[in-house]
Length: 315
Image (cartoon, rainbow, N blue to C red; front, side, top):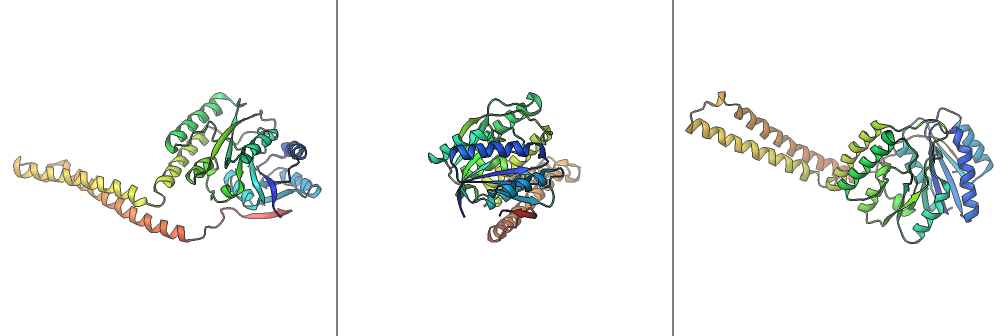
């Protein structure tokens, strides 16, 4: 049975914040008269999170629980919650209380205005400047330059989506922060709203500077998927032919030196360079052809989920 609003919340060792988060969410849902469901995805928590979630689900049938057998990460957790959501509008948010549930009505209203995706912009950030804010600013700027999608805060989990948009995007790896990029590729209309950001009261952050490096590596994947996912031969083959051409030209120069300058080839390091570049180029062309075959098989196959569900409650 479909509802108006689904709130999807990945949970990993957030036992101390679950009760307060649920209370604030219910307050918003009741005041706004939303026909809503709350989907908690327990991502292999090792604390009392599952116990508290079961208690909430027993008392409130609109609370639905998905529990993983182990910790898979935020992206698989969001993917599972979105897959099981029945709402026409889907909200995603963190469980650590740093996202404010009272921002949800403003985001929902923008969806009702016709936007396909509403991204939160945490203002002001309540995190350490050098550890969290500065790396985030740099990452957001680079993502905007590379993808052409300009947002102030790709890393804000608090977002609102039209269900038909987000359910059509396959998530894997650590790609949840790039959902606006995927959405833009499909022609989605995206906007951004400022949201409250609160200091973390319980537990510790699961993010750090190393995560920024991982984001930049993921960005390379996103760029490749956006530009070459259906034509990898253009990337590998184009690069390969360039290497082969340079190797061929250097080879011609080696022949010129041998016959006109009387430089013996075995004493000329350029000969090795020419052969090396030509072989690299040839191998890149072959990789491009193999990638084309893989892409064809991928688009004709049915992908499996990247997570294993241990338990479902109220679903």
